Length: 249
Length: 223
Image (tube, rainbow over all chains, first blue to last red; front, top):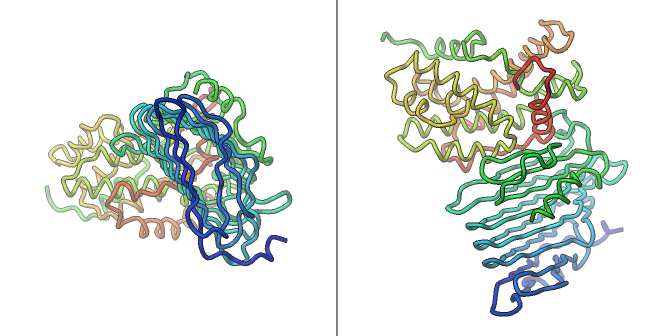
């Protein structure tokens, strides 16, 4: 049982940057901090003149009380980075403790990031603070999917507070969102009794207005969000919207 | 003009009989009912809105009031609101109400600088238009935040009578029961001055309902 493991007081962060060079892109990976603490380890799958593909693999048991996952990701001028997660993440019962999961993304001019996130499950008794903060420079584009799941099968779920923000050039806010999922979020209008909340975020490009109207929210500044609510984690992300957006990206 | 006590002006602004097309609004309730919300769920829906959407709206209004009374630009407030309102159907509904409110306040307070600034703003959302009225009426930030919360609760309650077979005394009891939460939210938000601090509390199901409702042809309410 994972709950028998000791709490971790210290953290290890992950830095990933992909920058252009004359030839193949330059991929830099660092995981500074306590080597005994768990982290997300980027594994380079493929790279070329202006692109790279990276898998984020959990290094150590995630996510337990005291864990502080931190990922800083930089995509250089004109580079396209694809990030995949080989598996979802389960935040386990923290028995009064808590954990954090912070992602900071910097996209240089004309950079593209496509991040195929997997479900993040908040078990009963888990208490997690999550944040994602994105800065997009001129011409940069982001396509990201995310699924938040309240509880494993048969559970009500724990407590998740998520801050999500994206800013364009000159710090213009594109999307700012604070999602609190706990017992009270089962109320109608928030989750309305659904267990999973799926999101596709597409920023930096205007999407064909007829593409996938279901759950579609067009943002004030160029960008679109698709939302799905479901009882099943794998059904929450609007699949058609994700696939269509991947092709468009 | 003779001095008018601020509580009278607050009553005026909170009155559903104002010509600002309040009767066309259900605060998302119609979309919710179309997706299966029942009469018994309405009080929970009201409390969910007070914890999410209303905080964004009241926070926007309070920060806009600060910007109006301190000669600060309104554009960053509108940008912050728009980034926290991902649904284009909800942004459009808010701007239609903002326009109607702005037309009214321009008639009531033609010489007030805040009202002129708000009416000159392209695509002014309702929360910012309400801040213009509050500035002209001399309302405090906490009163403005209460007004936003109270109006939301009343909008749901009165729309529920048109959509569901309910007793009006019962729905008024729901409004009465929600007043402590309105007061609590207003007290928590009244001190905000920076657009970055406006709450961004999301109501995902409300957004999805609102978007589907905007495309629906069978409806009594515009939003």
